[in-house]
Image 1: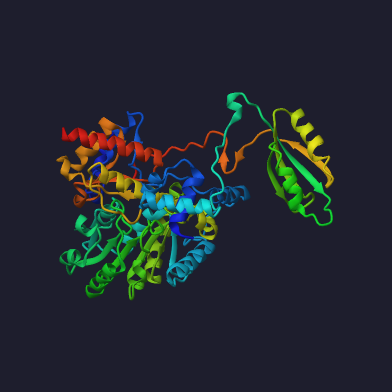
Image 2: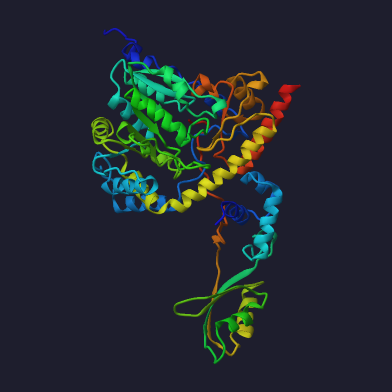
Length: 163
Length: 393
């Protein structure tokens, strides 16, 4: 991989708001070159999306999250992809993954209350023909999300002066 | 009653002859201030990567708290030998040509003591790390200073080195990538130095602790130059590359006679390097490349930022290709390095190190470590810009 592309992706993955001018300064290139490269990365789908990690609790929006394990019966002419597509179109569903092991698909679902999530799973997911069984695990606390640790960072003190 | 005594009379002459650190005053100044941004550090702002710390913790849980062999854990010496063969084709025998030390600091001390006889001259290239001159003095040697200059981007030239060599010259201490300037040496320039080394039958102590922090070009170990392996002891460590400063782990690689002599001193003074750090170092060499390269890329971005920043506020700064220091020129402001640094600290609360601390050749410059967060670097450059503007009025 081109070193500049690696720099751009690392910078944006860490802070998507970094401007092309800032990235240019950090990499010793021109803002124009950076803008062009980013445009190309967006076009080719290397950069999928820019988003913000929000702590909704702090504004009183106490969302409930659950991880749902699904066992699936595959039907003739239909693979996992078709089931995944049916499921991921619900806005309540935050992530969908096909896994190896005891069950097939793992979902993350977000709702306003436990009841909300439980009803969503019972009515919308469990009732799908291909779903053999569901198992719902409510999230009690998230410690780290998408590489970001969600509490005060470890503070270390260095000497202000050393050689 | 027995008479009182003045214990200072017991102090050895060699110790007394070491000049006091020019930085002591700064420690006192800093301790009273708040909202300080420090570019005064000589260590990474990263924490040791977790996989390394986790390995150290695991070893403690298992009860690995014993001495190791004087030379260091065989697995660690093996990994080092493999690493340097892989990186540079350097072929060191892990059993006889590698010594694990308590930081590069110890390696430096015992390397100098292993080769210097009283009265021997040792060439110290400045600006450079503050320990070289005292190490030579404590070993009874005579430090001879050779200066590097801004016009050469603080690289050592054969022309500068040649006049300093006398019949008493025993060794030369090199430090590239350099603390405090961030300078590196290109292979071509190093070959010229190597010719002089052979011509005058010198030994080379090469402190390459910033090896992995080389951003442009490729690091060339002095020992990898043709004919230099047996004339050079390479000193290196884990502090900078793997953010392991406080774990105190370094190493030396060189000819068996040299390493054995260093080991003789080491076994009676240090016995062995701490085992916990050695275990962490094995993990660093085996699995630390990704994290290390990630940190290096981060430093590289900050490097671009600060160099551009200093030049934009009117402090001319050459492009440092290694380490994590920028060395802007402040001579045009009319202030000395220490006056500039002290006023900057008092008026704008930014800590920098005056260049003359690293030798006279550093006068007119400031050492600014960019091993700090980008936010802090931005604030520091803004404050320094205000300070420089204020001086013009």
